[in-house]
Image (cartoon, rainbow, N blue to C red; front, side, top):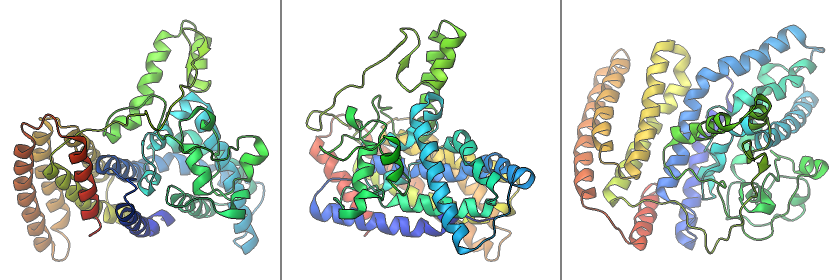
Length: 426
């Protein structure tokens, strides 16, 4: 089974981001920072790759329940698709709310909230493991007789809908605000202001929040991010950072019941002191976002390499069923190394340049091995070799341009990011 509406929507996602970046540059609204955006996209790209392995578990459970325990047989007719979409959206609300109100489940969702910006790239910042924790919430649909194809299609449409609401360029939307999830409602959801925490969990319809008491209208403009920022551009660390926090809390918990509270109470529970820590107040005027300064050549290099990663990952996701699990695992590890090293380069780590040179050579070798058996494989492999040589030269230049860069004025950093973002759509 290869039903994935998300794959069909990916080109439109990037087109929409390009339009938003152009409008952002034209209006000087400063919605994008290159390091943040590439980290968001790296998290999303790696999530799609990791999902190849995890869906064997999550979709396997759904298929097993449908095949052996379904109470009804639901035909594929118009009313069943409408009903499936409504039921999926309700299940999504429950799963999403649990992901905020159960600390263990928050580990699988926190990645999506870590960005301190709010733009369309944030929509693609997805967690590797969220589906593991939320998959059981959708099993009632399997019991009712909605097959796996229906689940995947309505789930994909639901996720595609949520893409466009991650923007600050659209204000209130009139009567739609009463029953649809909108950019205004979802900005609240991403806010770390105390009044906005754990509000507006809707996917498509905001009616669930209104019915179950989790609705909050947008008042002051939110401050985005999480209450304990990770201060890193590393997408892999982004996926594991909260698990590390939980492990520390479990070690501090004095009794077994306290350890259970660490796992299943809301985030913020302190087992050692047996209290919830208050959510700190925050002001947009005073809040300092995490940022790092690197030379413009480094920014442009990472942007170019992400473009290559995207060009390589998209066909892999399309045709991965034709590869063995060992080949898939090697490619997944290389994708993970790639997005991690992007973060290390953005953070100015000197040894990241040596890691990057090795990554380029290994990726070139793997790509050559996979491309040579294909028609025109020799020419494709030669193209990979040429791009690798050019990348190594660019990397050498980037490393030397970064040497001695210890204090770049904030305006210079802002201009570099704006220019790089503009270059990505020109």
